[in-house]
Structures are given as structure tokens and as C-alpha cells.
Length: 225
Image (cartoon, rainbow, N blue to C red; front, side, top):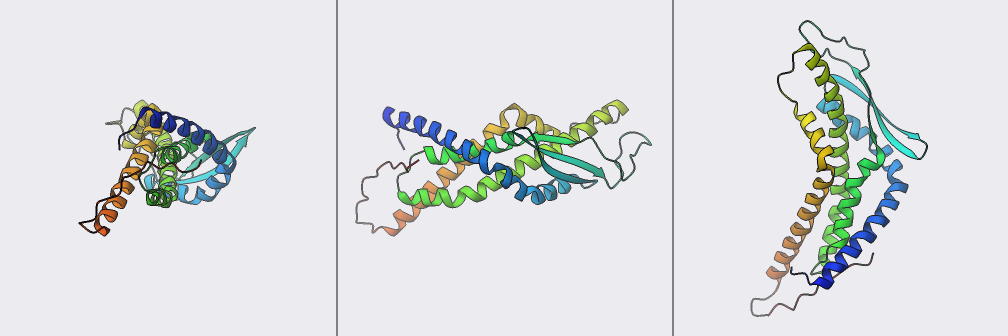
């Protein structure tokens, strides 16, 4: 799809409008959304940290929402030679601000709404994928971020004990997210969604048309925002 300067300006304006509108909407429904997802977040964190039992809750400090995790050791974890914190001990809590975890969803959905399409069916396909992809983004980014924070605490303790051999992948992911990954992942997801739906709809349309019938001239379509 070739974009003219006018279309580029339209995409930029629509991206800004969608970003503001979705940010306000997610700010309103975000707390209820995360309250509903807390059991799934706990399941994923426990899956990545099987020695611990994570207790998650959403707390509010003024107008700021914070996802708080209090992990409890249920199986001994080796920190140093002969040093295994026993079960039943609480580990340092991990937290993340709600607005930070809503950012990938706002960016992903804004890109889907701002980028033009060739056919109306593409908008149907994008909307059909928007909810599951957004849920996956929220679950993976939040659970991996919290598990990475907890792993960082264990890494610092192992460094002091002199038993750290290499950087765990959870810490690597945490650094990646804090270094721009929180923006990069939703952009890549949006590119994959838009291009995948376009290719699928385009292939289906081409297959359905008779060979002798010339394809109609394609128009660039923007949905209402």
C-alpha cells in the first residue's frame, strides 16, 4: 500500500486521536480489567516461579493504581552454598504501575485504528483479533515483568553469595521491557495483525473472483474514530 502525503497526515492525526481516546477509555476500565485478569496473572507467575506462591492484588495510592505481588516461598530456593531460605518465608514484594501495563494495549489498538485498509473486511478481521491479542499482550507483559522483578531480587542475593553464574532470562526480559520493549512489542503485534489480516482477506478475495474478471480498483478505507 503506497501512502500519499495526505494519507500520512491522516494516519498521524488518527493515531493521535485514537491514542488519546483509548488511553482515557483504558484508564476508566483498566482497574476492572486487571481485577478480572488477576487469577490468570497469578497462574502465569506461579508457572514461571514454581518455588513461589504469588499473591496478587490491585491497590490504589491516590489516583494511581498499582499491581502488587507478595510471593511466598513454598519450596526451598538455593541462594548460596548451604543457604536455602525455608518455605513459608515472604520474599520482597514486586510492583508495577497499572498505567505502564495498559500502555501496550493502547498503542496496539491505536495502530489498528489509525492504519488504513483496502477492504471493509479487513476491519472486521482486525476487530476480531483485537481482543485476544490485547489480552495476550497484557497477560504476558505483566506476568513476565512481575516475575522478572522477583528474579532480580534473587539475582542480587546470589551475587552477594557469589553463586550467580549467568543472567536469568526473566531478568533479561525485564531489562528489555524497561529499555523500550514495552513500546516495541505492541508495534510488532500491530504490524503482524494488520499485514496478516490484509494478506488473508486479499488471498480469499482473489481466490473467490473469476480469473477473467478484472479486479476492481482498490480504495483506501478509514473507519470512523
